[in-house]
Amino acid sequence: MNSADYKKFEKKGYLIKKNIINLDLLNDVKLSMIKIMLPYIKNKKLPNKKNNDIDYLFNQISRNKKLRSNIYKTFYNIFGINRLLYDKSLMNMLKKIGYKLPIFLSSDITAIEPDNKKYLLNLHQDLRGIPYTSFRSAIIWAPMSEGELTGGINIYEGSHKLGPIKHKISEVNGHEYVEKKFTKNFKKITVENLKVGDCLIFSPFCLHSSIPNFGKKIRWTLRYSVDDAHNTNHLDKNLHIFDKSKYTTDLTNDERRKLVEKKNN
Ligand SMILES: O=C(O)CCC(=O)C(=O)O
Image (cartoon, rainbow, N blue to C red; front, side, top):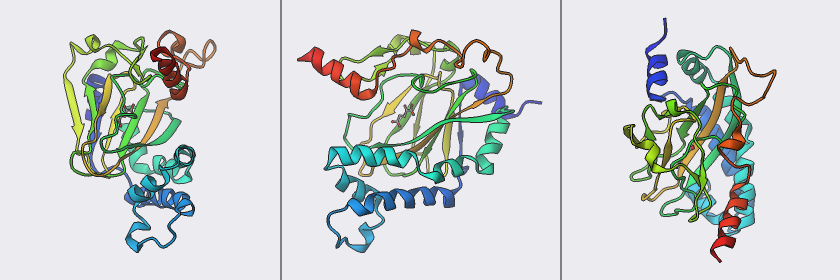
């Protein structure tokens, strides 16, 4: 018999699970982030309470763009990120949505800063860079921080049933996006105010977009993409479940941004 979570995930394309992330393991990840940043903080006489204030440290290192970018990329490789994914509560959640053979595809950490529009994502599907092996793949989106007005995600219930859609490149910020008209038959769900420990799990084919951060703190999020390798029947032809070149570009964020800047000048 399929679980209630399985049915919901099939129908709506997303689920919100409360208190599912192991907080000790999450704190280990945060501690690693702090340890990566601390050696680059110029002011060695930090007030004690700033020593473990991730936002403060990140704002300091963000003054140097190169450093910020490299530190950010280093966060992705923290060992504890994978340890957290393999924790039994997340594995049980995947079992409940019908995963017979969960596989790990990618992980990262995102920082959405207050009143900074640069990294906000337009309406899109998560098609880029991830080698999906089935249409039941999922994104696990878990807040690492919480606070008033820090925003979140808009997600369109049931829109995963559209399958992959061709994305365009925004002339404003170079991000990829899907035209708004595709949302018209789907209810918009606003996912805000999740607590640390909660998570949103959704199909990468669900249309979704960022809700801006108008709060005081950085919205830190841990993200995984996972898939079910059971019943994959296309590997003798392709690694990937669909032809990505039809829907999305291989250009990096920087390359797309530069392309748009060149066009606008
Ligand atoms: O955190 C956000 O603002 C958006 C995240 C998102 O769209 C994604 O994970 O694909």
